[in-house]
Image (cartoon, rainbow, N blue to C red; front, side, top):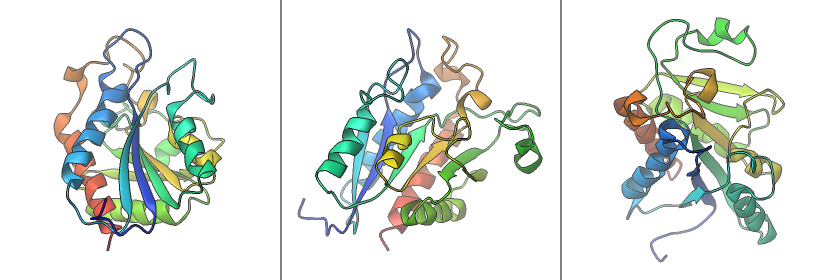
Amino acid sequence: MEKFVIQNWVFGGAHYDVCGDQEGADDNASGTVGLLELARLLKDKKLKHRIEIVAYTLEEPPFFRTENMGSYVHAKSLKDNNQPVYGMVCLEMIGYFDNRKNTQDYPVGLLSWFYGNTGDFITVVNKFNRGKFSSAFSSNFKKLADIKTKMFTGPQTLQGIDYSDHLNYWKFGYSALMITDTAFYRNKNYHKKTDQMHTLDIGKMAKVIDGVYLSLVMLQK
């Protein structure tokens, strides 16, 4: 604790539960691996903002959007205790990439005109009025991550934009964002037994994690 000069708290989070009886390699073992690697990389770093790594249970149905979600419990506890939260990064499915054409879908077809139809990128997802943390982190990630990145900012009502644990930090007024390979809009193994490790691109996943790490470290300067 003594090594931190704490001004605000930053949280890196991912859920470790799986939907049904399946491996859940992308959803969300990939995010959990990201958390573990971030913990290793951040160990012994002298930080201005205290960074905590948090793993959540009960993100999947039937608990999604309920107060039983681990992230809801955590976000509410921060609010109840008046913790000085700077922001939160949610790692939600970060391992599936496909370089073939017509492998990327969207909630609105028109988006393919702007983002393309090839599922070869990682996405930083924000809502409108995203807050200072999300703005700074997104800017850092775009500059520092060694992987093709798309920035998406939209209304919270758009299907898919709040489909993970960051939604509960939004509920309590915190600046939060999601790093994602876009889940079922790309990975058709979503919530199926075919969501297995051999389908993931570990090299690109590592670059995503490195980008998150570098972006968090840059916030300390």
